[in-house]
Length: 233
Length: 233
DNA sequence: GGGAACAAAAAGTCAGACTTATATGTCACA
DNA sequence: TGTGACATATAAGTCTGACTTTTTGTTCCC
Image (cartoon, rainbow over all chains, first blue to last red; front, side, top):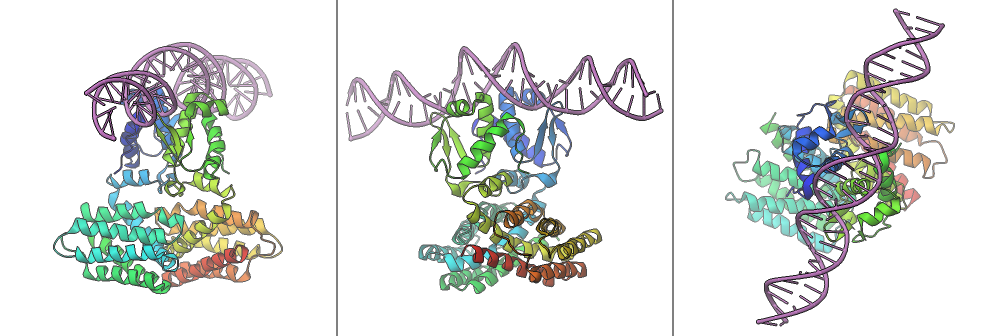
């Protein structure tokens, strides 16, 4: 899933990235390239490449005669999928999950409205297929199967919106939904009301009813937010 | 504004990044590190650092024995501020501007609603100050002054929402608004109705009226979308 | 025709020497 | 005592060349 692993510098990032995003090095901390290279037992060239990547994520800033300083959290590229994964993997997870869910609540209803206008016949078919899959996996602790169709459903909506910015949030949504199923508490079968809503959204999109699709999706996301409030008020 | 310039590898990126995002190298194109290093007259180490950054933006993929291949547009990290700037600087600009405006139309109303709940007294004051600044620069071709306050206004809203994902879209909004004023056609003074809406949003946020703040902001973004439709139907 | 051995190509890695910018401390002078 | 110019040390930045590793495509044999 989150395999940066490509090459030695990727190995370094897998270790250093999470450490920084977890706040192990508070903002303003100064690291030195040579020292890091020693610590990770890699050459300076490799270490420099890793630092460059962290710099492009705005996690650190490299300045002559000073070193590599950790930037304040407010400047991080929090939309970078890699950064999102790192933050979801650390203790900041609940806070991060809430931020992303709020983002979903803003984006997905609008995306659904656009999908109702722009979705192709194929996308409509895929959507109903996903919704039916959710229904058939909604009882009897088939959580994994349910999750699979749920993720696919929201991906299709985001893609069908025709907006590239929305489409690229598919991975984020997948991460949030997976997080809810795996890490957070999810004893019981999914809420039947939510399942019904998904089916209705699929219908609305197929019918080209943008207003209804948007409204129904808003209900879904409101539900997701309430779920968070119950778990961590 | 968009000064990557830090170091030699930054110079290379300023040249290669825009070229890739502009589609000069179609997806699947293969570049070789050594050749690029020669072309830009830099050492391989510097070139490798540049490639690493492009790779972290998912613009390219580097594989042994094959080279550096350009990835399909759909996989790019389109939320990376650097990528956004590069794309806004090329012929793709109108399309990009539309995508971002649609994103704004989804995010900003929700952000305004949250701001009404969470804004501090200081933020409220700042907001009304911005709105008043917009009013006082709304007549007599004071476009630059108007833009300044407009950008500040939306930044405060996004920050006051208390959601870090929203807050980080401040730069995007700034870029969109600046684009509208500078590059697109903007002969006349801003629409008086829009100015009034901003003042009303500031009031609603101060009053803690989330529903009203959200609704008014939605009107603002709808206006922005209509403006685009008029310019490029 | 299919599979195994082989060769070439390009990225990846490393080590070492050198350059450059810049923060900081020093000292003279006002 | 404060201030400006100057020297110095430091850490990033750059370049080069040699070497390693992985992967692809070819060739050769069964």
